[in-house]
Structure formats: structure tokens, C-alpha cells
Image (cartoon, rainbow, N blue to C red; front, side, top):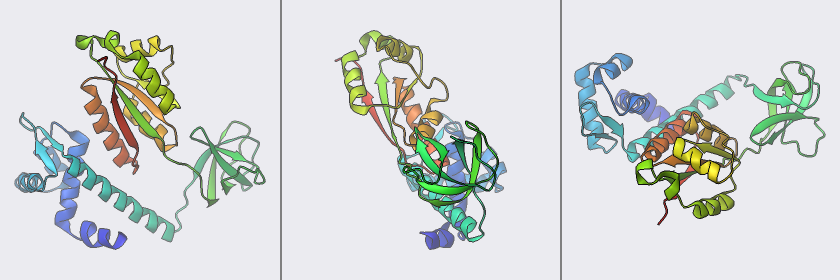
Length: 277
């Protein structure tokens, strides 16, 4: 994989330009100005136009019904995600070879002095320092700063493997207000989905979602920046349930895909329709 990345993406100027264009489209879709991409990556508008046509023929890019309306196809999203992962792997390999230090940030559960060896565990998606002889220790590192109980602390020279599995995201699609809103949501079905999924965090988008949460007598943990927060929480091993209305589901999925690529994750998500039959 590393050799393939170096031989194709980094050494083939055309492939790297396609990668840059796909990345810019993902960042700014659906309203894309070819001139803006031209200015960003430093090639002519005519060249950008040719690349757009080529990417469309390859099934990586599709045009919408309006002018300057472009977006990545599922195939384009997969390709961009894979190439970003390859780049991230390559950069991490170089950092390891150059011995670039990476500090893990945790919360101290006891007073720690700089240079002291401490254990590291994860709980609820958060890193915590514990004594090295703690039976639940997942890794051991060196404190990069002094810290008292409850303070943040940096760890370096980490040895061991942090057991941080990825969580999942369940998107519950609710009917819009024009289709009955919360009054036309199948509350019994939603309760069943919640019992089965067992979410660690609940997010809500819009007034209909808030009304459903109220009917369920639940408390929303996330109300703003839903997609970003959901991906971050899932990457820390938490299962996140999100209430989204109608057409906002597609936007939510698109943003999750974007966040997945940005953070080199592959968070699994599923959509369930909660409209009453």
C-alpha cells in the first residue's frame, strides 16, 4: 500500500491533481467554482475543466441540475477516503522513522509529576492516567507535565495498545412537519430501536427531533454540530443515536462521510425510518 501510494499518488502529477480536485469538491460541494479550485491548486481553469470531464467519465464526480452544482459520487467518496488513509499511513510511517513525538492527552486521576511513568486507560471515550500497577492498564507512558487530580496531562513514549474500538451511529429519520412531525413518528418503534442500539450519546437536529425526545422523556447530549460531534464520539468507542428530519438525513450522511475522511475513520452508520405506517 505504501509503495503504491508513492508510485501513483505522490509521483504521478495527474493522479495527485485529481486527488486535489476531489478534495476541493468535497470541501465546498455542491456549489463549486472551477476558478476557485484553479486558484487553490495552481493550474488553469481550462485544465480544471478537462479534469472535471475526466472525473465524471470515471464515475467519481457528478453534476447537479444547476450551474456549478457538483458533488462526489459514492465511488468518488470511497476513492478519496482511501487515498487520504494512504497518505495518513505514509505520514505516520515517516514520523515514526523520524521519531517525531506524539503527546497523548489524558485526565489525571491522581497527582503526577513530569517524567513520572503512569498507566493509561480509556473510559467513556476519554483517556485517564492511573498507577502503572492498576490491573486495567492498557498502555504505559511518561508524563510530559505536572498535573493534579482532574487536570489534563500529556503523555509521551507510549508503550502498549489503547483498547479504543470504534462505535456506531444510528440515524433515526423523522417525518417533517408537513408530514405530521412528531405526531406521525412511531414512538413505540423508536423505543425498540433505542433498547436494541443502547446509545451512549443522543443527538437531536431540529424542533421535530426535540419534540420526539421530549415524548420519549430523554435528554439530548448533542444539539449543535451533530455530524462532527457524532463522528468524534463514535471514534472514541461510543454509540451515538441521532434524530434527523426528512431530507436532512442525506446532508447528515454526507457530512459524516466528510468527517470520516478528515479524521481517517471508517465509522459505520445506519438509517432507520421512524414514520408511522
